[in-house]
Length: 357
Ligand code: NAD
Image (tube, rainbow, N blue to C red):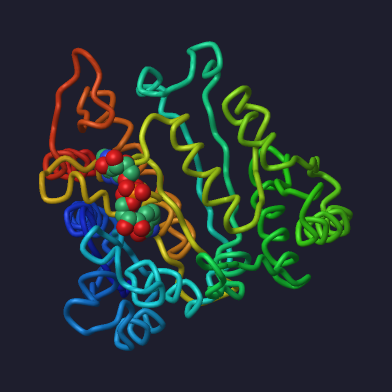
């Protein structure tokens, strides 16, 4: 069996963490007799430097022909003053849109070995944490009309949050399907007390909930959800929400698990290749220093094996390898604890790949 992976390291820590993934995929390749073919592509700041645009056409074309897309991260101080549509982040938003990946799955799972790296009290973590945030990815305020005008004494700027019924339906259905395979609980997070678009989310979700009788549906305002995630995260199983709320809540959820560097994500459409990437950014403050935690990216390939390649056993192998390595006490700086062995990005990649063999 052959699988073609579009390989996009991007900026900052992207290239360092993506390199670790190759080691792990090679170990999976040996064990499962599957051949992975990689094609390295440009996105973000490096693409701007080399081609003048954050998402070159070649990247789009090859991604569309691939079985899956593996992405590091984009962005950095060097490009921060470019106009919005020429910034590295524009490349990221465009590739998501080009591939039609409307559902962003962001699991926040606490490895028991990292309990003390979590920012929450031990009693709140009792019994573990396993929340799946399903974030709408290619609509809402990040894609709505945005404008700036000159006015007396300054500027006026606005962004618009727009959602239509079909965009809500497809993501809410996806979230219900996921809830069915988990603990059968779904919470819609919105701001329906203030926003008209949120009221549409509620109406659509209430209607679709009729089709999923076995799943318990609840509704929560985003401000309350931000608080409840810290106060009692176990009350959540699947959270479904819009683009901006999901962006913010999933970063918050990462702190339950100890570090932004631990968390993977999968972005899926109706068909076509999914995009797999860690949830963190390019971490320019630690780039090139062998300090980045590659586990979020490595856990992303577990999601790739499961959702795009239908290789659940291999996905479990990758997750188990991470768990074994944590059991042995290996820690990158962001999750370092007393008495553990501090390792860099490279070494962490090596020991996880070895654990698969
Ligand atoms: P960030 O996620 O890059 O970093 C936030 C903090 O977490 C930093 O202190 C960083 O050192 C740390 N961190 C992140 N990943 C880590 C890892 N793997 N191991 C250890 N520590 C890690 O967010 P930011 O600083 O707000 O943004 C930096 C740049 O990344 C910006 O240009 C931003 O636009 C971009 N960004 C890109 C993505 C993406 O590519 N998907 C997501 C978020 C931000």
